Length: 544
Image (cartoon, rainbow, N blue to C red; front, side, top):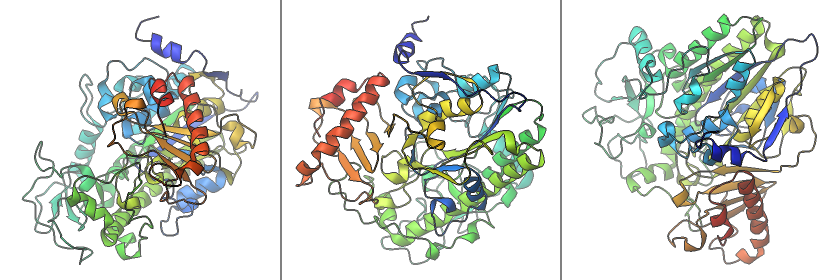
């Protein structure tokens, strides 16, 4: 065994290894259709109780399958989360701790659920956003396009392919007065006032769709505007609906599904980029949601007096997410992007039906992490509040997974690997998760908690553990914890679903909550033991 793989083998020495349920004699193999959006929070679904957003196709999927009410991102950052999904191993085990680890040479050579299926004779294909170390893409039957141009990868990137697709449907043009240029599509869009590249506004937005500052500033200029970034691009994209990123990625996956031989088992992934930034979407989706009709987060005015996550340091950006009217603008675009993604989910499901594949195809719908969307006056991801860490998860396999089912117990990305292989009837290699089949079938399961972890070792996390109604956010930096780090936090999500009342930290009444916090910390320590986490000693010496 190579020295490179030795740490992984040691970490997995006591991990779960099992065989999946064998398919009944004479039955067809179980196919896998894995559909994933990017940055979709758990409550951005009609079936999750959202009173505004319409997602008829995902709602249908939930009615015909089982929805997990408390699924969590293993790491609320794109690359680590997606690597955990594929491998069933924590981000610390795979050495993929942040988006910069796409080319980390220390990432171990471990199986993915698709590599296991490929070796079992499945045809495996992946379309859309690939945001994982490229070594894991080499198992697929068709070359996978990395999200951006990658060193050592000869094929074009997904971004390059999307722009070629756009050139055929919507030729590029210069921005006109009142327009800016989207850095993904390189096409014009009309910004909302919340857009970072719009002229600064000192007070609340007076016009739901004000004139933009022109296109004198190029927001994709390397090393230029400090507000540069896709996260600040928010508005109406001036292209046809079938020229959008969601349409490009959805059409590729749909064409692959059409080609699938019904006599050969397959695993097909459709990774839809939206509703990840840039937050732009064309009509007719854009016009479906008016800002004035959008909800305003009840926690938008959170003073962060006892918060584990401080707001953005740049007030020019932070103030936008404390302005109710501007957050309504962001929400309207975000919901419109999800509405378009839902349409493509419907097309994939309809194709399964037409090809006679519905009954023997496991459909998984999820996202890599959420979006704060103005909760606590914040935006984006990277943090452990519910908006960022809590994600959707729906599974459907007719006749095997109960229709209309709900699972309330907390689960995580790390559980997908074993679950998919279990339903496919394949051996399950060593991993750090567990099959969710017992929970789906109403049986007991010894693991009652879900963990999310992010950050390099020097930062000590943060780590989040959810068990029952309780949620602990803690930084594992030991006795030398810098005094300016955010506080640890304990929330009771049943009585405080908005996470406004941290029961520990600087709370003068924290002594009453310390026993519960200590119990969750002990559960987190047990998880660190199971996964050989390098911050175990630090956590043991961390006082909360």
